[in-house]
Length: 263
Image 1 (cartoon, rainbow, N blue to C red):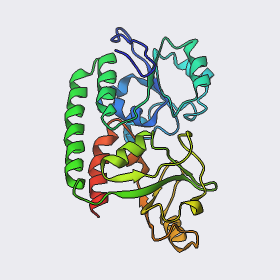
Image 2 (cartoon, rainbow, N blue to C red; image 1 turned 180 degrees about the vertical axis):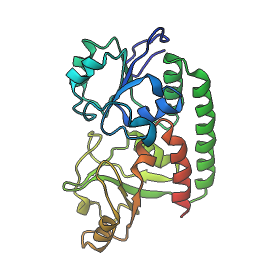
Image 3 (cartoon, helix red, strand yellow; image 1 turned 60 degrees about the horizontal axis):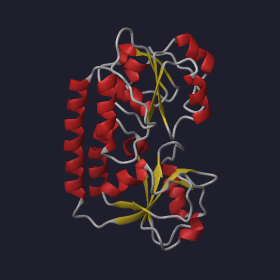
Image 4 (cartoon, rainbow, N blue to C red; image 1 turned 90 degrees about the vertical axis):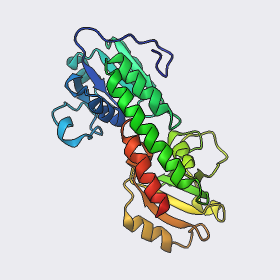
């Protein structure tokens, strides 16, 4: 089965040792019943909290330690186009037999992600179960939000400088599916820096994500009271895991987003 890099992967045979450098996919692997095959993770792979503690950490998503990775003797390394630097992944290819590249860009790409992991690691029945749960949650959220007025939003992921997301991202497409339209920007950068004062009158709501920058309620209050607030835009704190984590977290994510929009 083909991954996001167009590489055809075979079903595993013999001993399987997985190093996952993608937090949301680490969680997915546990949901697929593959926890005993995971031999390494990043420091940001912290779900499921109880089970993941036994798995060694080898650094971050952007700078995992290649020597520590080599010592783990993984048969498979799972990476993501947005989260892991290509140069680092290319170095790992020199000694990891199988590098599986992922790049979900649309909510329904979760289905193919489940299928890919289920196929490679002999967990097709578990992948089918997750697919059914995801499609049910996804459709329910669409039905619940389809009658609500659409809103133009600015989804912020960083402060000093302010950073947002492009429309050609998984997060933007997830938001759009429940009626939040990330505003268009004159840039091809996927996660650009912005001057929010220049967006006055173009935004109905500002969404402050809890990751990667850990926005908190005080940030909402500060922005609401700021003189540079974008016209009459509302400001809301939103759980970044529920909007940006593909994989099994997307199932809970759509339940969360349906409730968030209704509120």
